[in-house]
Every structure is written in C-alpha cells, then in structure tokens.
Image (cartoon, rainbow, N blue to C red):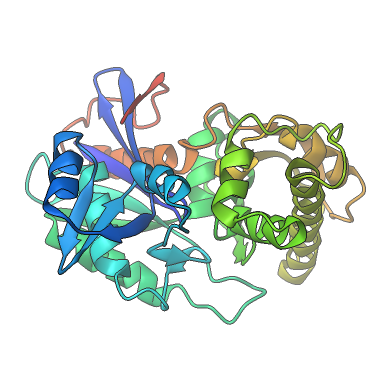
Length: 347
C-alpha cells in the first residue's frame, strides 16, 4: 500500500488505492474555540463531532468548525496560513496533527510510503517553505509513515497529464497559495508559487463588502459561478472581481518566470487548472480567455479543469507514491502506478 496526502490551507485530503478504486478522505483544515462544559463535551462526543479539550476550552476541528463558527458568529482559526504552517497560531501543530491523523489513518504496514504535497517557495513573498515541509515530514514519520514531499504543482502533472506524457503546465489554485509547474516528460522545467489564492479572494471580498470572511467562504462554496451576471455591490459580484484579478496576477507571474527560465519557445503544451479555488463554474473559460492575451513564449494547446479539482493534488501524490512502490517491488508492484479509477470520497 501507499498513500498520497494533500496538505492544504483550507482542506487536508488523503488518497489510497482499494482495488480498482481510489478512495479519498477529506477534512477542513480549521478549528473554532468554544467554552467547555460537561454537557457540551458529551453532546459533541455523542454526535461524533471532531474535537479536543484543553483546560477550560473545547476546540471543534475539521468540517464541523465552519458550522460552529457561523452559529456562534465566530471566525475559524487555521493551523496554516499562506500555504504553510501559521507562525501566529500557537495551536497550529497539534491541530494539524489531529486533522491529519483523522484523514490519513494509521499505516497499513510499518513505514508505509506516503507522498505529501509541499508548495514551492513563493516568488512574490519572503516566506520560505522549509520549516513547514520538515515539520510535516517529522509529524508523518512519528505516525509510522515513510514520508516524501512532492511539489504541489508537480502532483497536478502526475494526476492530470498522464495521457500527455506528463508534459504541460499544471496550476493548483489553493486557498493559501497558487502553485505552478511546467513539466516536460515528467521533468520539471519551471516550478514556483505565488502567495495569493482563495483566501486572498475571500479577504479582499470581505473588506470590500463588510461581510465576515467565513460568510464569504460559505457563499463562494455554495453554487457561486463566474458568469459575471451578478450585480456589482454584493458579495458574489465582489468575488467575481477579485477572481479576475487573481487570474491576471497568476498569468503575469507565469509570463515573467518563463522569460527568466528561458523556456524553449517551440513548446506546445496543455494547461490544467485544479485546486479548490478553481471549483466555481466558469473558472476554466475565464482563465482561457485571459491566457489568450498573455505574452507567453510557447504555444498552449488548450486549457481544461481537473474533473475533481479538490482531489487532484492528493491523487497526484498517490500516483507518485505508487510508482515508487512499484519500482521498488513493494506491495502493488504488479498494478499500474497511474491506473485511472473513479474516485470515492469518505467523510
């Protein structure tokens, strides 16, 4: 067995192979603090709400955190910020450990191989990802896994571009960062991240409309579409404006990095977009429209969204883990490493 893990600012997801099917497990990467009482803790336990108690506080963790935040008019707290562990959150490591344990489970054997996503250093920020990457490696090792980081953009290539010989431009629009990777026959030619993603869109929309960030997030995740028929002035209108600005910013940085890396002009590659921030209907078409006006020195054969954008990075990490396991002659060595299977989700 082997597993893939997507450690995202908004969600943590794992993928594992069960026969011909890929099974995904997902939890929101957030928590909310509520007052402790014996009755409250009993009700949370009886209802299978993921939580932990610390002194006179109870922390509701994962998918239930957003529901509790909206009910009690509180803001959720995040173990991660801008794509990496938050330096401002004292509870970051114990909270992310609890969520990850729920998502990935125990190893099926000692030192089970597990590839986990790690962002590239952002080119528009002084942030560094080294501490984040090594902390996760240590945490997963303590859980009994043999962990290996995989660049988030490269994971998109593994997940979505097998039919194109793992050649193309993969862009993962996450909550904290946007990760970009250009690969040629599974060899990365260019990889970087920018410190903007879905959180930036939510925060700008919140400031523009005076709406709490968690409420903006709920609206964005509830059938929001990038059709530009929404009246300007409301939350959805503001979301559309900042989405368009985000796409322009990503494309501008792709063009700049391609020039600096001196990428061969004769390339003709597909572009695949994925990640939770790319989920709204209309995202793919809007991105393709903006790319048409971009000054990129290679040809783009087409733009498409991943069929399951939330699962793409975890799926790519799983492909990489199974491929290495197959090469080493481990369990599952006779199975095709990049076998396509209909995803199933577990909550």
